[in-house]
Length: 590
Ligand code: ATP
Image (cartoon, rainbow, N blue to C red; front, side):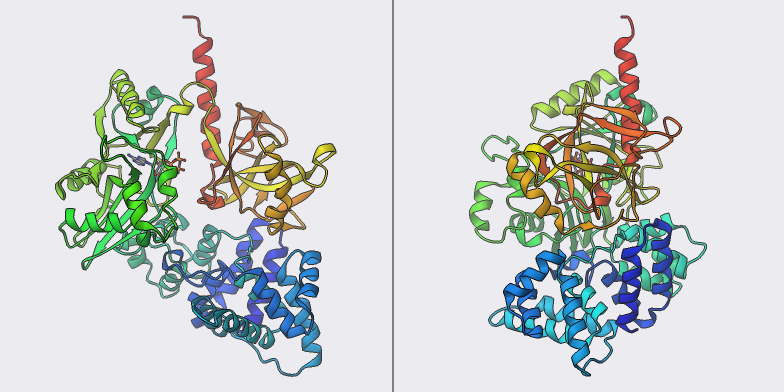
């Protein structure tokens, strides 16, 4: 397939304002891909391979500027000036390629395969002379394509393609293109156990839908992790769980999925990135503790004090993530204990469809607890008093609350899903609406007075998982230090677009729109009904949505979360209902 066809469709995708239109364009593009389907699906994601392969492009702006200067005969400073004006290096590359193509007959047509292969080489170049090599590979690509190709290749190479399509949108399009009649949710579930869009695309195109749906978890391929819903008190949780449930400490560490096969251990993060190299101590103690052929375990790694057994805060583990140097010292300073709470594969057998209590039994049977590996502390209970006591114990042990787990026959492991089979209760949202929310920045309003030159407020949105859109839920103007505030236009500039992105829904008209990308943590005082926000629109009141009152930025950028991991509109709706219930409860005469 010619890459010029892809560029043309990418142009259409970035111009459309309608969610359904995105899918239609994608369906056409995917159907035309032929043998290039797999590579094309990665390119649509702005990637070259699934995340867990760890292939990173993200070329520095500086390198692209030098490469473009070399092609155009302009100076680096000239290109930098064009970049500042256009706000995007892709546009600059397009202009330069346009000028170049008028003076030359050299260009031949690039194929998807050419582009993928060259970008892969770019990602792999290492060592001495690597900058020069990278510049050369990139220049070749730009000189061989048409101006639109140059624009999109540059955006992919810098990690800034941003077509505004999520994995869910691509999966939806794949189903429509190749598997009409299948359920998107089932395909999504299969993808969550094997998060490789190229693999899923090929299976669907080749009619291997049955195999795809049956496969489940596979050792050495990270599954997206199962997540919890939230409720504000134990009574509601027990009610939702049908009277009784398993309750576990909610450890404040780092989600850790451990895979083992053929004598090899691989560790993956909550976001399916491989982190094995950062945790050689976990690998070593795993090999000492476990003796099976293959498995996939799920748990939370927490730093602790080996003298006292005391658990330390999460920040100490996050220091280790992505850190390759000085690991020995770190291991001594911050040893880790992994609290295991699930097993989804053992010795050739997927266990994701086995009930939770049975999985826990299997987990307990395969190892003896040690300093490095334990099972999550658990009780099974139907008594509010007993669970309250357990909750207090958990807080006193340095945990942040509890997670309730469904123990009925339906309690399967749902990869990538935030559902009612697991419900969390944290210390900070016991009484009023105190929990933090992770919201997506989708727009901004210009600042006045002291805030001239930056934004006065950001437009924040929750993710509506069912509709795959981002729904506005508040204007956020508090909680920013001056430093953060004045850096916002620069930090968010890469994502600004000149029209409302197709997957954003709001009745507000901000001065600047942003492609959903950045997730930040906010704290609010209450959830109210609002005529201008579209979160859970029409679900509580006709013609109105929900809004967060008095939102404040907590200072935490959730760079570990994709926009689709943000707090969902469905969660905010639940929070609104529980807030109403608890307000009723507290105003009742005693
Ligand atoms: P939070 O910021 O509250 O951790 P989250 O969005 O990262 O939220 P949630 O689904 O809301 O994740 O909460 C579940 C998280 O709690 C899991 O991802 C896991 O990292 C952690 N956790 C700690 N102990 C347990 C446990 N016993 N069972 C399940 N998850 C646990």
